[in-house]
Amino acid sequence: MVTLRRRTTVVTGEPEPKLEEKRPCDDLTILSDDSDDSDDSSSDSAVKQLRGRWELASVLNFLNVFGPLVSDKLKLTAEEIEMGLIKSDINNAQLHIALLKGIPPVNKSLDDANAWITVLCKKLAPWWPWIAEGEIPVTASKGEEISEYQELDPTTRLKFLKALCELRVQQDDARSYIQENTKEGDCDSHFRKRKLGGDGKKTSYWFDGNDIQGYRLYREVNEISKSAKARKNACSDKSGFCWEIEATNLDEFQRVARKLLSSKASSLAATGEMIETEAIPIVEKYHKKKERAMIKKMKQERVVSVNFSRLIRATRACRNRIPASYTYDEYDKMIDDAVEEAEESDRDDEEGKEQESASLGSNNSSEGNKMKSTEDEAPEISNEDLKENEKIKEEAEPKEEFTAKNRLRQRLTRNSALC
Image (tube, rainbow, N blue to C red; front, side, top):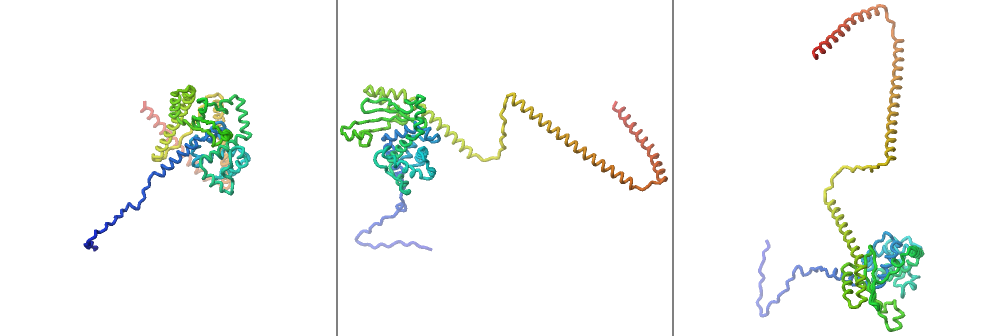
């Protein structure tokens, strides 16, 4: 048995130092959502940085115009393209692969994991001075370009994507696609965007999008610099060229329209009226369609979850119903088929009867042969035996007559009883 003894304390002049009690929770590290918040804030800042680049609007407009030429199966929204550039996920890979497949010669290893990055660097390296500015950030170097590309910031990846779109539009099929559509008279609305309006000096408003990507309102601000060097590099980052996304959903469109309508400048008020009459009805229709699709998807998921929650029971197999047809040709065909089946069954019955009769004839002939053989083999009957047989027959005949008479009497009595 373990006994606990009280510790004896020695009385001194100095007070006894207090020991800090170590709690069991002191060694534990409490996990918080700070990392998630930091990731969200970094992604939000990256999205804001991307939306301030004119290259993003150019890429989205390219995919809007040449989407059927690039790929019919690839249906990415603008938000998915933005997140693909930030995280370098599968959507970003699918977009680059679809663009690279339209630039000959097509590499067979494009569908392999991260092989498209090597092909991208090899394709863009000789064309970079003509389709982009500066030096290419990443070049093909024995697989190291894959890790280098994944470490790039989203704006540099956007430059790669913009350069790839520029190279894709220079292919022969893209030129023929433009020529065919311009012949149909759709050049102004499809290939050439017109601004909704602006203040007439520095600011312009653009509206672009489709039912797959979504619709966006852009604001372009072009500050003219006084220096000659900045005027020379008007398209570079050093100039006063600014591109912003003002609205991506219905609420933001309505907010911008109200803001511009309340402006004192007549040009901005006219731009707000254009947004309210031309852009907002399209966005409203798109959002209603999107809401219906979401509701339908939720219902389907609910039905699937309910079906999985139920017990699995054995049910009978479903019958396949023949579709009804009311044409005379189908009716005549059905009658002809029925007549043919009846004739075939009759033929089978006749053949079966013939086979039975043939077998019976063969049996009778064999029995007759047997009887003949037995008659030949039978011994000769004497006269005395014949006389005995005749006597037996004579004795049996009256018995038969008697029995017949009895039968007639019984029938008569029965008939009389019934009457």
